[in-house]
Structures are given as structure tokens and as C-alpha cells.
Length: 128
Image (cartoon, rainbow, N blue to C red):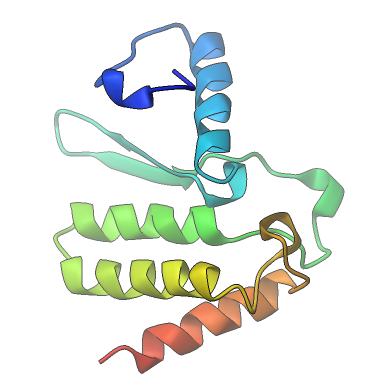
């Protein structure tokens, strides 16, 4: 899984092993702070959420990385057929990370959650 995750299309396992494996895979792409999630039922009902937990140790300190939540919203918008909005938010998130100027601590920066979010919002507004 770690050396070549592309060999898997679908993984079926009990919840405990799924939690362990999803955390492992999140590490492959940057950690839990950037990992979105979507659960889509056969009937079309869907739930989108960030993978990480509540992080009570940093609650109320303006330190959390909102990327996973924003990318989960991108998945939701795409599920709803709102591609243009999804692409704007996704592009703003990825460009902010690539630029490396305004990043939360877990991404190697010093920005607060509110500063990082404000930068992403600014970029969304600047996209034509």
C-alpha cells in the first residue's frame, strides 16, 4: 500500500482496519489536515467531511488546518454538479499550498487558520 497505492481500486475491511489504513494513506499525501472524505450511497445521498478528528488540544486556538474541510466541500460541490465553484476553491487551495507563503503550522508555515483561510478566500475572489 505505501510503496504502490495505485495497485488498489477498492479496499474492503472492518472499521478499525479502515481507520488505520486511511490514516496511513493520508500520510502519503500530506497528512490528515489535507485529506477530504466523501461517503456516497447508491441512492445518491452523500456525506462529506474532513478525515481528521476534532483535535481538542488545539480547539479555540486558531491553529487547525482547514484544507481537508475545504476539499471535502469541493467534493460535495462536484457531487451536486457545481463544477465551476468546486474548481475555484480547489485551485485556490492548491495554489496557496504551492506558493508556500501563507501556510498553517502542520504544512510548514506560521499562519493561523484564519490567515490561511483568508488567503484562500482572496484567491477564490481573484479567479475570473
